[in-house]
Length: 516
Ligand code: UN1
Image 1 (cartoon, rainbow, N blue to C red):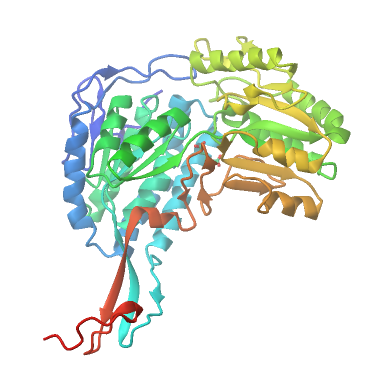
Image 2 (image 1 turned 90 degrees about the vertical axis):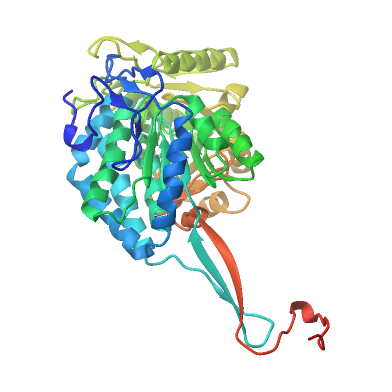
Protein backbone atom coordinates (compact mmCIF):
# COMPACT_ATOMS: atom_id res chain seq x y z
CA UNK A 1 0.00 0.00 0.00
CA UNK A 2 1.22 3.48 -0.79
CA UNK A 3 1.54 5.26 2.52
CA UNK A 4 -0.25 8.62 2.98
CA UNK A 5 2.92 10.67 3.37
CA UNK A 6 1.06 13.92 3.96
CA UNK A 7 -0.11 12.61 7.35
CA UNK A 8 3.13 10.88 8.29
CA UNK A 9 6.29 12.48 9.61
CA UNK A 10 9.38 12.41 7.37
CA UNK A 11 11.26 9.13 7.33
CA UNK A 12 14.68 8.64 8.83
CA UNK A 13 16.28 7.15 5.71
CA UNK A 14 14.61 3.82 5.00
CA UNK A 15 12.57 3.66 8.19
CA UNK A 16 10.37 5.76 10.44
CA UNK A 17 11.52 6.94 13.82
CA UNK A 18 9.44 5.66 16.70
CA UNK A 19 10.28 8.69 18.81
CA UNK A 20 8.46 11.74 17.62
CA UNK A 21 6.80 14.81 19.02
CA UNK A 22 5.47 18.09 17.81
CA UNK A 23 8.13 19.86 15.81
CA UNK A 24 10.90 20.41 16.78
CA UNK A 25 10.94 18.13 19.82
CA UNK A 26 11.66 15.27 20.34
CA UNK A 27 12.79 13.01 17.50
CA UNK A 28 15.31 10.35 16.53
CA UNK A 29 14.68 6.94 18.07
CA UNK A 30 17.69 4.98 19.19
CA UNK A 31 16.22 1.57 20.02
CA UNK A 32 16.09 -1.60 17.96
CA UNK A 33 14.58 -1.86 14.48
CA UNK A 34 11.01 -3.21 14.53
CA UNK A 35 9.55 -4.87 11.47
CA UNK A 36 5.81 -5.20 12.00
CA UNK A 37 3.78 -7.28 9.55
CA UNK A 38 0.29 -6.70 8.26
CA UNK A 39 -2.29 -9.20 9.50
CA UNK A 40 -3.72 -9.14 5.97
CA UNK A 41 -0.89 -11.09 4.36
CA UNK A 42 1.92 -11.28 6.91
CA UNK A 43 4.07 -8.98 4.79
CA UNK A 44 6.22 -6.33 6.49
CA UNK A 45 4.50 -2.95 6.55
CA UNK A 46 7.33 -0.53 7.20
CA UNK A 47 10.40 -0.71 9.43
CA UNK A 48 10.35 1.44 12.55
CA UNK A 49 13.25 2.33 14.79
CA UNK A 50 11.92 1.83 18.32
CA UNK A 51 12.41 4.42 21.02
CA UNK A 52 14.91 3.28 23.62
CA UNK A 53 13.44 3.04 27.13
CA UNK A 54 15.84 5.81 28.16
CA UNK A 55 14.15 8.14 25.65
CA UNK A 56 10.97 8.05 27.69
CA UNK A 57 12.68 10.37 30.18
CA UNK A 58 13.38 12.79 27.32
CA UNK A 59 9.74 12.72 26.24
CA UNK A 60 8.62 13.31 29.83
CA UNK A 61 11.06 16.18 30.16
CA UNK A 62 9.64 17.79 27.02
CA UNK A 63 6.10 17.15 28.28
CA UNK A 64 6.87 18.77 31.63
CA UNK A 65 8.15 21.80 29.81
CA UNK A 66 5.06 21.89 27.57
CA UNK A 67 2.84 21.54 30.63
CA UNK A 68 4.06 24.81 32.10
CA UNK A 69 2.83 26.63 29.03
CA UNK A 70 -0.26 24.59 28.16
CA UNK A 71 -1.83 24.71 31.64
CA UNK A 72 -2.02 28.50 31.35
CA UNK A 73 -3.89 28.44 28.03
CA UNK A 74 -7.60 28.99 28.81
CA UNK A 75 -9.54 25.73 28.41
CA UNK A 76 -11.83 26.97 25.58
CA UNK A 77 -8.69 27.92 23.65
CA UNK A 78 -7.33 24.43 24.29
CA UNK A 79 -10.66 23.25 22.92
CA UNK A 80 -10.01 25.20 19.73
CA UNK A 81 -6.80 23.23 19.31
CA UNK A 82 -8.72 19.98 19.63
CA UNK A 83 -11.23 21.33 17.11
CA UNK A 84 -8.34 21.85 14.66
CA UNK A 85 -7.32 18.25 15.26
CA UNK A 86 -10.91 17.10 14.64
CA UNK A 87 -11.07 19.03 11.35
CA UNK A 88 -7.88 17.35 10.15
CA UNK A 89 -9.16 13.94 11.19
CA UNK A 90 -12.35 14.49 9.19
CA UNK A 91 -10.35 15.56 6.14
CA UNK A 92 -8.14 12.47 6.37
CA UNK A 93 -10.63 9.91 7.63
CA UNK A 94 -10.20 7.44 4.80
CA UNK A 95 -6.39 7.55 4.77
CA UNK A 96 -6.25 7.07 8.52
CA UNK A 97 -8.70 4.17 8.29
CA UNK A 98 -6.56 2.54 5.59
CA UNK A 99 -3.61 2.49 7.97
CA UNK A 100 -5.79 0.74 10.56
CA UNK A 101 -6.82 -1.82 7.95
CA UNK A 102 -3.18 -2.37 7.01
CA UNK A 103 -1.90 -2.75 10.57
CA UNK A 104 -4.85 -4.18 12.50
CA UNK A 105 -6.68 -5.94 9.64
CA UNK A 106 -10.02 -4.22 10.20
CA UNK A 107 -12.55 -3.96 7.39
CA UNK A 108 -13.00 -0.35 6.15
CA UNK A 109 -16.44 0.07 7.77
CA UNK A 110 -14.96 -0.71 11.18
CA UNK A 111 -11.70 1.13 10.58
CA UNK A 112 -13.62 4.25 9.53
CA UNK A 113 -15.90 3.74 12.52
CA UNK A 114 -12.84 3.85 14.72
CA UNK A 115 -11.69 7.12 13.17
CA UNK A 116 -15.23 8.43 13.61
CA UNK A 117 -14.81 7.76 17.35
CA UNK A 118 -11.83 10.10 17.22
CA UNK A 119 -13.92 12.79 15.47
CA UNK A 120 -16.71 12.26 18.01
CA UNK A 121 -14.41 12.53 20.99
CA UNK A 122 -12.92 15.74 19.53
CA UNK A 123 -16.40 17.25 19.42
CA UNK A 124 -17.11 16.05 22.92
CA UNK A 125 -13.82 17.51 24.15
CA UNK A 126 -14.43 20.87 22.45
CA UNK A 127 -17.78 21.18 24.23
CA UNK A 128 -16.20 20.01 27.45
CA UNK A 129 -13.56 22.73 27.20
CA UNK A 130 -16.29 25.22 28.14
CA UNK A 131 -17.78 23.03 30.83
CA UNK A 132 -14.89 21.99 33.06
CA UNK A 133 -16.33 22.92 36.40
CA UNK A 134 -16.18 22.51 40.15
CA UNK A 135 -18.69 23.01 42.93
CA UNK A 136 -19.22 25.84 45.34
CA UNK A 137 -20.04 24.25 48.66
CA UNK A 138 -21.94 25.61 51.65
CA UNK A 139 -19.53 26.50 54.43
CA UNK A 140 -20.10 26.39 58.17
CA UNK A 141 -18.21 29.63 58.77
CA UNK A 142 -19.52 33.17 58.26
CA UNK A 143 -17.94 35.22 55.49
CA UNK A 144 -16.21 32.21 54.05
CA UNK A 145 -16.50 30.57 50.71
CA UNK A 146 -15.64 26.99 49.79
CA UNK A 147 -14.97 26.19 46.15
CA UNK A 148 -13.51 23.34 44.16
CA UNK A 149 -11.03 24.28 41.49
CA UNK A 150 -10.08 21.78 38.81
CA UNK A 151 -6.59 22.24 37.42
CA UNK A 152 -4.53 20.49 34.75
CA UNK A 153 -2.82 17.41 36.18
CA UNK A 154 0.44 17.11 34.24
CA UNK A 155 1.91 14.76 31.62
CA UNK A 156 -0.36 11.78 30.93
CA UNK A 157 1.08 8.46 29.75
CA UNK A 158 -1.11 6.47 27.39
CA UNK A 159 -0.42 2.80 26.66
CA UNK A 160 -2.70 1.37 23.98
CA UNK A 161 -3.33 -1.93 22.19
CA UNK A 162 -3.29 -3.05 18.55
CA UNK A 163 -7.04 -3.58 18.20
CA UNK A 164 -8.05 0.08 18.62
CA UNK A 165 -4.84 1.75 17.50
CA UNK A 166 -6.32 5.25 17.18
CA UNK A 167 -9.57 5.57 19.15
CA UNK A 168 -8.35 4.53 22.59
CA UNK A 169 -5.45 6.98 22.45
CA UNK A 170 -7.84 9.64 21.12
CA UNK A 171 -10.26 9.16 24.04
CA UNK A 172 -7.40 9.85 26.42
CA UNK A 173 -5.48 12.40 24.41
CA UNK A 174 -8.34 14.65 23.27
CA UNK A 175 -9.82 14.83 26.77
CA UNK A 176 -6.36 15.19 28.35
CA UNK A 177 -5.47 18.03 25.98
CA UNK A 178 -8.53 20.13 26.82
CA UNK A 179 -7.88 19.41 30.48
CA UNK A 180 -4.45 21.00 30.01
CA UNK A 181 -2.24 17.90 29.97
CA UNK A 182 0.54 16.92 27.56
CA UNK A 183 0.33 13.34 26.28
CA UNK A 184 3.08 10.73 25.95
CA UNK A 185 1.87 7.76 23.96
CA UNK A 186 3.24 4.26 23.85
CA UNK A 187 1.17 2.49 21.17
CA UNK A 188 1.26 -1.18 20.25
CA UNK A 189 4.36 -2.07 18.23
CA UNK A 190 1.94 -3.80 15.83
CA UNK A 191 0.41 -0.48 14.75
CA UNK A 192 3.19 2.14 14.56
CA UNK A 193 2.12 3.75 11.28
CA UNK A 194 -1.34 4.49 12.63
CA UNK A 195 0.28 5.99 15.72
CA UNK A 196 2.70 8.07 13.67
CA UNK A 197 -0.17 9.39 11.57
CA UNK A 198 -2.30 10.19 14.64
CA UNK A 199 0.55 12.09 16.24
CA UNK A 200 1.29 13.83 12.96
CA UNK A 201 -2.31 15.04 12.80
CA UNK A 202 -1.71 16.64 16.22
CA UNK A 203 1.54 18.14 14.91
CA UNK A 204 -0.24 19.54 11.83
CA UNK A 205 -2.93 21.03 14.05
CA UNK A 206 -0.19 22.57 16.20
CA UNK A 207 1.34 24.15 13.09
CA UNK A 208 -2.07 25.65 12.21
CA UNK A 209 -2.42 26.81 15.80
CA UNK A 210 0.62 29.03 15.52
CA UNK A 211 3.02 28.26 18.35
CA UNK A 212 0.52 28.26 21.18
CA UNK A 213 0.69 24.47 21.24
CA UNK A 214 4.18 23.79 22.60
CA UNK A 215 6.62 21.15 21.41
CA UNK A 216 6.37 18.26 23.84
CA UNK A 217 2.57 18.53 24.04
CA UNK A 218 2.16 15.23 22.23
CA UNK A 219 4.94 12.67 22.02
CA UNK A 220 5.11 9.20 20.65
CA UNK A 221 7.38 6.53 22.09
CA UNK A 222 6.98 3.43 19.96
CA UNK A 223 8.64 0.41 21.44
CA UNK A 224 8.25 -2.83 23.29
CA UNK A 225 7.11 -3.47 26.85
CA UNK A 226 10.28 -1.94 28.32
CA UNK A 227 9.21 1.45 26.93
CA UNK A 228 5.80 1.09 28.59
CA UNK A 229 7.49 0.10 31.86
CA UNK A 230 9.70 3.19 31.75
CA UNK A 231 6.61 5.36 31.24
CA UNK A 232 4.78 3.68 34.12
CA UNK A 233 7.78 4.13 36.42
CA UNK A 234 8.43 7.82 35.75
CA UNK A 235 7.34 9.83 38.81
CA UNK A 236 6.81 12.93 36.66
CA UNK A 237 3.84 11.24 34.98
CA UNK A 238 0.93 11.61 37.42
CA UNK A 239 -1.51 9.54 35.36
CA UNK A 240 -0.92 6.42 33.27
CA UNK A 241 -3.85 5.20 31.21
CA UNK A 242 -3.32 1.63 30.01
CA UNK A 243 -5.43 -0.52 27.73
CA UNK A 244 -4.59 -4.16 27.05
CA UNK A 245 -4.36 -7.50 28.77
CA UNK A 246 -4.99 -8.11 32.47
CA UNK A 247 -1.36 -9.15 33.15
CA UNK A 248 -0.08 -5.99 31.43
CA UNK A 249 -2.49 -3.82 33.42
CA UNK A 250 -1.63 -5.53 36.68
CA UNK A 251 2.07 -4.90 36.06
CA UNK A 252 1.53 -1.25 35.10
CA UNK A 253 -0.81 -0.61 38.03
CA UNK A 254 1.68 -2.01 40.53
CA UNK A 255 4.52 0.12 39.23
CA UNK A 256 2.35 3.26 39.16
CA UNK A 257 0.92 2.52 42.62
CA UNK A 258 4.38 2.00 44.09
CA UNK A 259 5.16 5.64 43.31
CA UNK A 260 1.62 6.65 44.35
CA UNK A 261 0.65 7.73 40.87
CA UNK A 262 -2.78 7.26 39.34
CA UNK A 263 -3.57 4.60 36.80
CA UNK A 264 -6.59 4.35 34.58
CA UNK A 265 -7.07 0.80 33.37
CA UNK A 266 -9.17 -0.70 30.60
CA UNK A 267 -8.21 -4.35 30.55
CA UNK A 268 -9.70 -7.62 29.43
CA UNK A 269 -13.39 -8.13 28.92
CA UNK A 270 -15.17 -11.47 28.87
CA UNK A 271 -18.47 -10.13 27.80
CA UNK A 272 -21.75 -11.93 28.20
CA UNK A 273 -25.28 -11.63 26.90
CA UNK A 274 -28.52 -13.12 28.19
CA UNK A 275 -31.28 -13.88 25.68
CA UNK A 276 -34.65 -14.33 27.34
CA UNK A 277 -37.78 -16.00 25.91
CA UNK A 278 -39.40 -12.64 25.07
CA UNK A 279 -36.39 -11.41 23.05
CA UNK A 280 -36.81 -10.08 19.53
CA UNK A 281 -34.65 -12.69 17.85
CA UNK A 282 -34.49 -10.80 14.56
CA UNK A 283 -32.40 -8.07 16.12
CA UNK A 284 -30.74 -10.39 18.63
CA UNK A 285 -29.09 -12.50 15.93
CA UNK A 286 -27.72 -9.40 14.21
CA UNK A 287 -26.41 -7.99 17.47
CA UNK A 288 -24.83 -11.32 18.42
CA UNK A 289 -23.14 -11.63 15.04
CA UNK A 290 -21.67 -8.13 15.05
CA UNK A 291 -20.51 -8.47 18.65
CA UNK A 292 -19.08 -11.97 18.23
CA UNK A 293 -17.40 -11.79 14.81
CA UNK A 294 -16.90 -8.03 14.20
CA UNK A 295 -13.20 -7.08 14.22
CA UNK A 296 -12.70 -10.87 14.03
CA UNK A 297 -13.62 -11.09 17.74
CA UNK A 298 -10.72 -8.82 18.67
CA UNK A 299 -12.52 -6.05 20.55
CA UNK A 300 -12.34 -5.75 24.32
CA UNK A 301 -16.12 -5.63 24.02
CA UNK A 302 -16.53 -8.71 21.78
CA UNK A 303 -19.22 -11.18 22.78
CA UNK A 304 -17.67 -14.28 24.35
CA UNK A 305 -20.48 -15.82 26.44
CA UNK A 306 -24.10 -16.26 25.47
CA UNK A 307 -26.74 -17.44 27.96
CA UNK A 308 -29.92 -18.45 26.19
CA UNK A 309 -33.20 -19.57 27.71
CA UNK A 310 -33.78 -23.26 26.98
CA UNK A 311 -37.11 -22.61 25.24
CA UNK A 312 -35.51 -20.53 22.50
CA UNK A 313 -31.96 -21.84 22.33
CA UNK A 314 -32.75 -24.35 19.55
CA UNK A 315 -34.12 -21.73 17.17
CA UNK A 316 -31.50 -19.12 18.09
CA UNK A 317 -28.65 -21.57 17.44
CA UNK A 318 -30.19 -22.60 14.11
CA UNK A 319 -30.42 -18.98 13.01
CA UNK A 320 -26.86 -18.27 14.06
CA UNK A 321 -25.61 -21.36 12.25
CA UNK A 322 -27.24 -20.12 9.06
CA UNK A 323 -25.64 -16.68 9.41
CA UNK A 324 -22.24 -18.13 10.34
CA UNK A 325 -22.28 -20.46 7.33
CA UNK A 326 -22.36 -17.52 4.93
CA UNK A 327 -20.09 -15.01 6.66
CA UNK A 328 -17.74 -13.40 4.13
CA UNK A 329 -14.28 -14.10 5.57
CA UNK A 330 -11.19 -12.75 3.86
CA UNK A 331 -9.17 -9.79 2.72
CA UNK A 332 -10.44 -6.82 4.74
CA UNK A 333 -9.79 -4.54 1.78
CA UNK A 334 -12.56 -6.28 -0.23
CA UNK A 335 -15.82 -4.41 0.18
CA UNK A 336 -17.84 -7.61 0.70
CA UNK A 337 -15.73 -8.89 3.61
CA UNK A 338 -17.17 -8.86 7.10
CA UNK A 339 -14.57 -10.96 8.93
CA UNK A 340 -10.93 -10.02 8.40
CA UNK A 341 -7.83 -11.73 9.76
CA UNK A 342 -6.63 -12.48 13.26
CA UNK A 343 -3.67 -10.35 14.24
CA UNK A 344 -1.11 -13.18 14.14
CA UNK A 345 -0.43 -16.92 14.46
CA UNK A 346 -0.35 -16.67 18.24
CA UNK A 347 -3.96 -15.49 18.25
CA UNK A 348 -4.90 -18.52 16.16
CA UNK A 349 -3.03 -20.90 18.49
CA UNK A 350 -4.78 -19.38 21.51
CA UNK A 351 -8.15 -19.83 19.85
CA UNK A 352 -7.34 -23.48 19.03
CA UNK A 353 -6.22 -24.09 22.62
CA UNK A 354 -9.49 -22.65 23.93
CA UNK A 355 -11.49 -24.79 21.49
CA UNK A 356 -9.61 -27.87 22.70
CA UNK A 357 -10.16 -26.93 26.35
CA UNK A 358 -13.86 -26.36 25.71
CA UNK A 359 -14.08 -29.79 24.08
CA UNK A 360 -12.36 -31.39 27.07
CA UNK A 361 -14.77 -29.61 29.39
CA UNK A 362 -17.80 -31.13 27.69
CA UNK A 363 -18.32 -28.61 24.90
CA UNK A 364 -19.77 -29.36 21.48
CA UNK A 365 -18.64 -27.39 18.47
CA UNK A 366 -21.70 -25.92 16.76
CA UNK A 367 -19.77 -24.42 13.86
CA UNK A 368 -16.50 -22.82 12.81
CA UNK A 369 -13.01 -22.91 14.29
CA UNK A 370 -11.18 -24.03 11.15
CA UNK A 371 -8.45 -22.09 9.43
CA UNK A 372 -9.51 -20.55 6.12
CA UNK A 373 -6.89 -20.81 3.41
CA UNK A 374 -8.91 -20.65 0.18
CA UNK A 375 -9.80 -17.28 -1.31
CA UNK A 376 -7.88 -15.31 1.31
CA UNK A 377 -4.49 -13.62 1.02
CA UNK A 378 -1.64 -16.04 1.67
CA UNK A 379 0.35 -15.23 4.79
CA UNK A 380 -2.62 -13.89 6.78
CA UNK A 381 -4.35 -15.82 9.56
CA UNK A 382 -8.01 -16.27 8.65
CA UNK A 383 -10.40 -18.38 10.69
CA UNK A 384 -14.05 -19.37 10.70
CA UNK A 385 -15.76 -17.76 13.70
CA UNK A 386 -16.76 -20.48 16.14
CA UNK A 387 -19.75 -21.21 18.34
CA UNK A 388 -19.38 -23.80 21.08
CA UNK A 389 -22.17 -25.15 23.24
CA UNK A 390 -21.38 -26.04 26.85
CA UNK A 391 -23.68 -27.70 29.38
CA UNK A 392 -22.58 -25.33 32.16
CA UNK A 393 -20.14 -22.43 32.47
CA UNK A 394 -16.77 -24.21 32.66
CA UNK A 395 -13.28 -22.82 33.49
CA UNK A 396 -12.43 -22.03 29.86
CA UNK A 397 -15.30 -19.55 29.89
CA UNK A 398 -13.62 -17.65 32.69
CA UNK A 399 -10.82 -16.65 30.35
CA UNK A 400 -10.92 -14.07 27.60
CA UNK A 401 -9.86 -15.56 24.28
CA UNK A 402 -9.14 -12.70 21.88
CA UNK A 403 -10.66 -14.34 18.81
CA UNK A 404 -14.10 -14.98 17.26
CA UNK A 405 -15.09 -17.71 19.69
CA UNK A 406 -18.41 -17.57 21.54
CA UNK A 407 -19.67 -20.08 24.08
CA UNK A 408 -23.37 -20.79 24.46
CA UNK A 409 -24.92 -22.09 27.68
CA UNK A 410 -28.65 -22.73 28.17
CA UNK A 411 -30.45 -21.50 31.27
CA UNK A 412 -33.82 -22.14 32.80
CA UNK A 413 -34.01 -19.68 35.65
CA UNK A 414 -33.32 -15.97 35.06
CA UNK A 415 -31.59 -15.43 38.41
CA UNK A 416 -29.22 -18.31 37.59
CA UNK A 417 -28.45 -16.68 34.24
CA UNK A 418 -27.44 -13.44 35.98
CA UNK A 419 -25.40 -15.42 38.48
CA UNK A 420 -23.51 -17.21 35.69
CA UNK A 421 -23.11 -13.99 33.79
CA UNK A 422 -21.36 -12.34 36.74
CA UNK A 423 -19.29 -15.36 37.78
CA UNK A 424 -16.15 -14.48 35.80
CA UNK A 425 -13.16 -12.35 36.84
CA UNK A 426 -13.74 -9.64 34.21
CA UNK A 427 -16.49 -7.02 34.10
CA UNK A 428 -16.39 -4.86 30.98
CA UNK A 429 -19.48 -5.18 28.82
CA UNK A 430 -22.79 -7.01 29.06
CA UNK A 431 -26.16 -7.18 27.37
CA UNK A 432 -29.62 -8.60 27.63
CA UNK A 433 -32.13 -9.21 24.88
CA UNK A 434 -35.61 -9.12 26.34
CA UNK A 435 -38.95 -7.45 25.92
CA UNK A 436 -39.77 -8.10 29.53
CA UNK A 437 -39.42 -4.78 31.34
CA UNK A 438 -38.91 -6.48 34.70
CA UNK A 439 -36.01 -8.58 33.48
CA UNK A 440 -34.48 -5.61 31.68
CA UNK A 441 -34.54 -3.55 34.85
CA UNK A 442 -33.34 -6.42 36.98
CA UNK A 443 -30.35 -6.74 34.63
CA UNK A 444 -29.47 -3.04 34.76
CA UNK A 445 -30.22 -2.84 38.49
CA UNK A 446 -27.93 -3.23 41.52
CA UNK A 447 -28.19 -7.02 41.60
CA UNK A 448 -27.97 -7.35 37.83
CA UNK A 449 -24.96 -7.12 35.54
CA UNK A 450 -21.77 -6.24 37.42
CA UNK A 451 -20.14 -4.71 34.33
CA UNK A 452 -19.24 -1.13 33.46
CA UNK A 453 -21.23 -1.29 30.22
CA UNK A 454 -24.74 -2.69 30.32
CA UNK A 455 -26.93 -2.87 27.22
CA UNK A 456 -30.57 -3.75 26.69
CA UNK A 457 -31.49 -5.01 23.22
CA UNK A 458 -28.08 -4.10 21.83
CA UNK A 459 -24.86 -6.09 21.53
CA UNK A 460 -21.89 -5.89 23.88
CA UNK A 461 -19.61 -4.01 21.47
CA UNK A 462 -19.79 -0.67 19.73
CA UNK A 463 -20.19 1.76 22.62
CA UNK A 464 -20.63 5.46 21.88
CA UNK A 465 -18.00 7.90 23.13
CA UNK A 466 -20.45 9.99 25.16
CA UNK A 467 -20.63 7.53 28.03
CA UNK A 468 -17.80 6.59 30.35
CA UNK A 469 -16.09 3.48 28.93
CA UNK A 470 -14.55 0.79 31.12
CA UNK A 471 -15.38 -1.94 33.56
CA UNK A 472 -15.04 -3.55 36.95
CA UNK A 473 -13.05 -6.36 38.57
CA UNK A 474 -10.14 -7.57 36.40
CA UNK A 475 -11.13 -5.05 33.74
CA UNK A 476 -9.41 -2.57 36.01
CA UNK A 477 -12.08 -0.11 37.14
CA UNK A 478 -11.07 2.77 34.84
CA UNK A 479 -13.51 4.95 32.93
CA UNK A 480 -12.38 6.72 29.78
CA UNK A 481 -13.90 8.89 27.08
CA UNK A 482 -17.24 10.57 27.88
CA UNK A 483 -19.40 11.50 30.88
CA UNK A 484 -17.24 12.83 33.74
CA UNK A 485 -14.11 10.83 32.84
CA UNK A 486 -12.37 14.18 32.38
CA UNK A 487 -11.98 14.51 36.13
CA UNK A 488 -9.22 11.90 36.10
CA UNK A 489 -7.10 14.11 33.87
CA UNK A 490 -7.29 17.00 36.31
CA UNK A 491 -6.43 17.64 39.93
CA UNK A 492 -8.96 19.00 42.37
CA UNK A 493 -8.11 21.78 44.80
CA UNK A 494 -10.56 22.50 47.60
CA UNK A 495 -10.19 26.22 48.25
CA UNK A 496 -11.48 27.99 51.35
CA UNK A 497 -11.55 31.76 51.25
CA UNK A 498 -12.15 33.94 54.28
CA UNK A 499 -13.45 37.31 53.15
CA UNK A 500 -14.24 38.55 56.69
CA UNK A 501 -12.13 40.13 59.38
CA UNK A 502 -12.63 37.34 61.98
CA UNK A 503 -10.92 33.99 62.10
CA UNK A 504 -13.59 31.43 63.04
CA UNK A 505 -12.20 27.89 63.10
CA UNK A 506 -14.03 24.93 61.63
CA UNK A 507 -15.70 22.47 64.00
CA UNK A 508 -16.25 25.41 66.37
CA UNK A 509 -12.76 25.07 67.79
CA UNK A 510 -11.67 27.87 70.07
CA UNK A 511 -7.95 28.37 70.01
CA UNK A 512 -6.30 31.36 71.62
CA UNK A 513 -8.95 33.90 70.61
CA UNK A 514 -7.12 36.62 72.53
CA UNK A 515 -3.71 35.80 71.02
CA UNK A 516 -1.93 38.70 69.31
C1 UN1 B 1 -11.55 -1.79 22.81
O1 UN1 B 1 -11.78 -2.86 22.26
O2 UN1 B 1 -10.53 -1.63 23.52
O3 UN1 B 1 -17.25 -0.32 22.29
C2 UN1 B 1 -12.36 -0.57 22.62
C3 UN1 B 1 -16.51 -0.66 21.35
C4 UN1 B 1 -15.58 0.38 20.79
C5 UN1 B 1 -14.35 0.49 21.60
C6 UN1 B 1 -13.66 -0.80 21.92
N1 UN1 B 1 -16.28 1.65 20.76
O4 UN1 B 1 -16.54 -1.77 20.85
